[in-house]
Length: 283
Image (tube, rainbow, N blue to C red; front, side, top):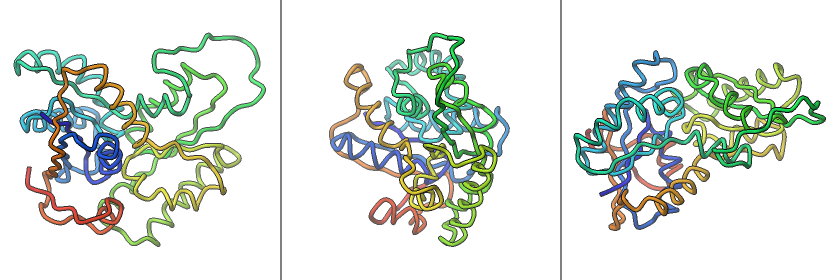
């Protein structure tokens, strides 16, 4: 058995890196759907179909648990798959399998509250608003998942989202640092104009963006806290596995990388982030 990590491309490596650090003995299979990346501009039904296909492939590779290391897939497809596809698939497969995402751990980290918590709605005026900026793909922005779920838990947090239509594609294509810097600077400036000032905190709501976190830090005011999805997700998955021993993560420390796109070495940006060569096998 193993843990599967799924993303439209190389962005999920940021989550995979944190999972490996937190669960060094576990076996992992990473699947990048690079033939169809990026997901952010695709219709919802197409995102659901592509995500389901990725999960099926990882379960066929022996994974018992799949982590959707993609905000677009998690925000658009996860609940639908959990409710309408996974129960029947689990019965047909005849073994425990599950699919989890990165949205829940991120919202828990952003609010400091457990997912089950819902704020009591009060009419009192909020004296101070904590302004939280979200940088994400158009599909994640359209879902409004962060606005909706954070508002359920915290009335003193105002969420503003900035869709970044081309950023994941540029990161996937190993664009020059100067080009990435210009695009990120533009999105940070656009969000700040809409808010009327810079956000107090920010979430990089696409795992591709974590690979360029240093550029976001440089574009935001010095010291602006970033809520890191990879670390929050790794901690949540560790707790989940401790509560659910039926999902066997393996114990051999195996690492496999699959792609629906071009197999072989990956781009330099991904390798620099990972800290060594990355060779993907064909999926």
